[in-house]
Length: 127
Image 1 (cartoon, rainbow, N blue to C red):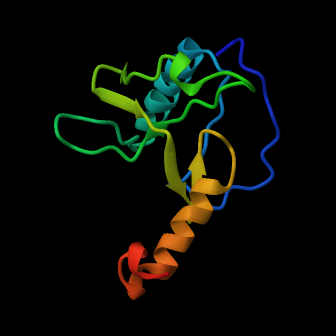
Image 2 (tube, rainbow, N blue to C red):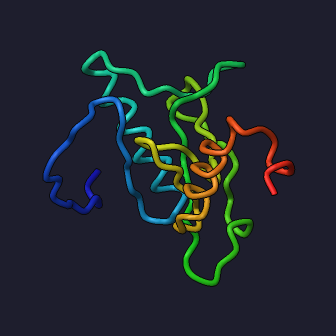
């Protein structure tokens, strides 16, 4: 990847969990994901992608620029390395926290409240 910019990574705590950041252009995401997929395969590692009915652990998330609607972007699944697809999601759980494309903590707070109140029954009976 000749045009890739570098950044310093000070530590990596997990080999199986990571976040990869790409410029907001879809073609860079697809090209970068394909390079990572191929590189992992050289070491016998696997990037989980959607194959048939198999769910994927790998997801892409689009974070729109300020004052831009999420729906305005192409968030359709994309094909990777002839083996499967990567889907976009609006939110996902990463290392215990819920991340949302809005980059607010609302989704994480809502998930934690729902988890804490679940033992007490349905939410409508809590008032």
